Image 1 (cartoon, one colour):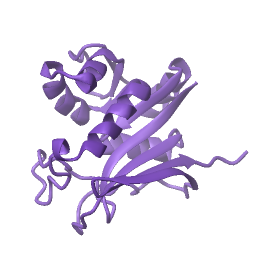
Image 2 (tube, one colour):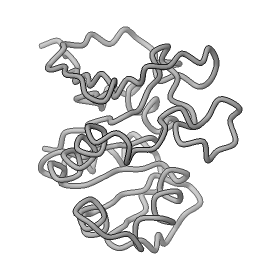
Image 3 (tube, rainbow, N blue to C red):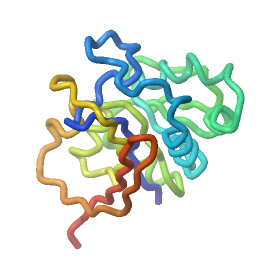
Length: 189
């Protein structure tokens, strides 16, 4: 059975909107340049190397599919080769190598994906998809990179997710002024 792992960049006050500044949000671009933060690059590469697949919402897929096929290096090689799944009601034939569109009910499609894929299914970005998966109790782990900035406004991760979600801190470390938090969701027996 697969394990859904959420991987998000987040400000200290919980904002996850437009970390790279490409979406036009007035406070976007708060992650800075990743090449200036080796610990972030290392974490992203470790997520990709440890995953059996990646799962995206359409907007995140389009952003990544636009840039990664032409890049080189270990991360590009892994992202381009690995299976990718895109939840979308409009995208039918994703063109990025090894990408498959998941249509229909999101919860049903992702539940089936968890049954079909053995290992980690990493979900980077994709806020609407992440909130849907959290609400449906399909998430197994959260990996949060907390950046030392407070911006006061913007979309936050834990909005509209329904019932209380107990978490257990699995690990924490710092690097490049970033706090890396890994939480496992606690399910009642």
